Amino acid sequence: MSYNDRPIGIFDSGLGGLTVFKALRKLLPEENIIYFGDTARVPYGTKSKEAVIAFSKEIAAYLLSKDIKLLVVACNTASSLALTEIRKISGVPVLGVIEPGAREALEGGEARRVLVIGTSATVSSRAYSLALKKNDASIYVAEKACPLFVPLAEEGWCSGRVAAAAAEKYLGPQKRKGFDTIILGCTHYPLLKKIISAALGPGVRVVDSAMAAARSAKAELEAGGLLRAGLRPPKADEFIVSDAPDKFKGLALKLLKIKTGKVKVMRF
Ligand code: DGL
Image 1 (cartoon, rainbow, N blue to C red):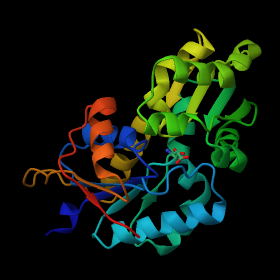
Image 2 (image 1 turned 45 degrees about the vertical axis):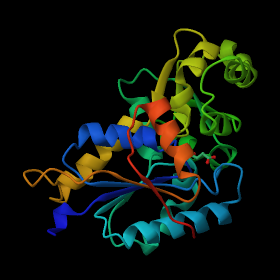
Image 3 (image 1 turned 180 degrees about the vertical axis):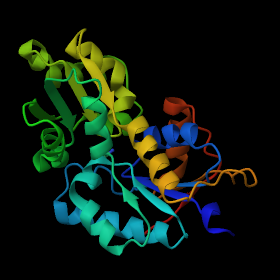
């Protein structure tokens, strides 16, 4: 196997990272990709920094053992808390989703009042505020944790009355605060994009980092001369979870129209 033939590894706590997987697949159709969802330990967003670092390093080491050429941390919580630690153990480039998401929000220069929503851990880390203000110190940023959105998505309840009530409870009070942009700072949240957008009302630009993260992965591979172009067609995508493979397979199809084929199980 030539070096460029090696797969891209990507992981999340569960199925949220599939939003990034989908963008990667679209932008890099010739690449081999391995996706890992830590379904046994989801959610990460309510756990301690130490736990998120330990889980993330375990998964990173596992994917590195599969000879990946790039690791995409498709989880805002792990990107906020564990990126530095993952990079210490990785011999290949490691990309998170925070920087690309912040850059995407600032593109066009119209964002002045930004609301970031994410898990409790991501919001406490202030990672988005730091990334946004590094680019533009004058920008106003508020962050709000919406922890129930993750279990709702993992349950497949991305629309309907319960999801809408949760969105209204979290975001209704934000409506009159004059935000022009909202960043979906959790890879699960694009699955609830419609109800999130409805709860905030019209005129608020909704930014998710999936495509931005995929673009940064492509740029990283290009810069390193690591693109797989011109070789044989890619292998079938590999999906691995730490528990409940059939539920993952069903929800990937239902929520994202992704046909995973057989989902393998890896228990740590
Ligand atoms: N999807 C992840 C994120 O982007 C993690 C959600 C969770 O497990 O709490 O933050």
